[in-house]
Length: 197
Image 1 (cartoon, rainbow, N blue to C red):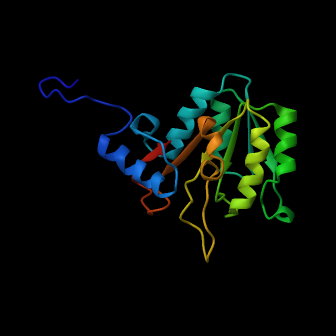
Image 2: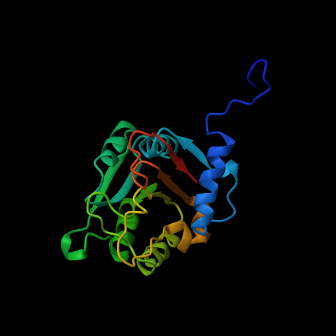
Image 3: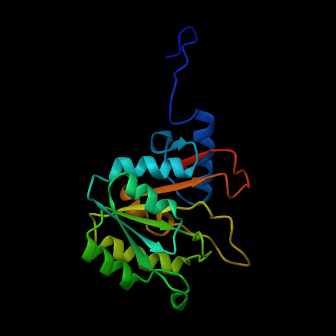
């Protein structure tokens, strides 16, 4: 409590900011979240790092599709986790296949699956059907946390309809952490605001 004002000081964001993010995710169809389920930080990179510190112990494994945003490997390195990039070449349209994910989760037994959609740097965007197929694999591996980096949700073109894993697999919400922010969608790179639901 702030002396003299009675205001409660919080580190997860003001009520107005949390409510704005709640409205955003509700517009995506992600319902059931409250202020207790949302937190903010100084950009999505900050959120991703904090989640890595929270979820990964030394020696734990994190897997993610490759090509990938270079900071993923750096974050894993900082927390002494083992990073396993999963190659997604042009012949796969730079997308992870369900069989590839299933094999990686069975072989490497990661604690975290980090998934960027649409992808930085390739721009590859997964359809609802593709996400549903990946979610079916994730259901078979209940030991895995799902960490989605949705920073580029608005950078899709034509009639493509953006979807995130939490939308297509609400049964996985208890182990899905959806990360987003304002820097890309609103071209506000200096506004260090990210959130996690």
